[in-house]
Image 1: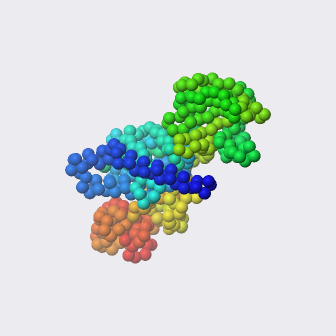
Image 2: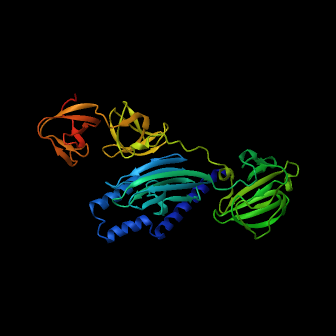
Image 3: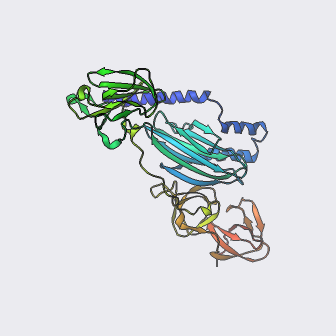
Length: 445
């Protein structure tokens, strides 16, 4: 039987994927898609700005920041160029995601918040789960199965603003014994019973006789009765999760068949009836899902670990250009020393601050690449680090690229203040006061 279990699980997952594919075809248009359609109707969809806006949204999904929960970030999406931010996260089995987005803009701009499930085959596009344009405010998503998700934020075209995003995990179910927690569980799912002839299909929560047993989820009570194994039992149908919750060994029951149940309602009281009469009083709590049978209650009950990191990065720098103060500063995919390293950056590399999480800045390099650097390894671009003699005819550009639009063309030799560097270019101030990028042709002084 054990050798067939992986096949059964695979068939269940494949079935879920097929159902989601069908639902994707027949779902309503999201606010984001409706906005794209409005641009098309206005004859703007093929303009350079609209195309850049679409590309920014797609790029954010293709290269999201992989974050661990709980997570919080303050960020900026600029108005001068289309932008979007996206975060990839994992929601384990038995958990639900709580996401809160607050967006501040002087123009009363809408921000589109879209949640996608990453497909089992990552060659397939992510599938839409939730979509809203009504931030600020929280929303909750409780997936039927564990998986990876991408949350994208993107304001309207030619609009920008500052946002705060907070992502947390919570247990899907309330703890079913009043005043108790995970430490009261002394027998877990799957342990042998009756000399190995069967397995324990639940958890045992020990408490004083008469302690209230409370509803872990809302639903409807049924099969209130007495059995040889469970003693006095209460079953509750949970329609939200398509599960049945089983409360056994009760000293007495406090509900009747057909009663509507809300979270926290008293269902009965801890006892040791049924085959538990030789053990101390406890509640046997089980979860059963159609098509899957008994499920381990632990992931549905245990509070997620971890806490939000305190924001210590200087958010006065949000939106500003800063430079790195050390050689080999690591650009990471997400905040934290355990995050994958994208690359090492040399001293005085100039980057723009787009966000802050904990003690990290989320930054954008002059060529467009994004990542995180330790905020303590940056400094404001205020004082020059050197000077550069520029020849007549040299061009100051908006970006460090020969194809970038020019800001100014220098006439005559000029000594320019140098504020930063990036891949063969210097970030300088022209005699006119303009800041821009100058290709390195001679050594700095």
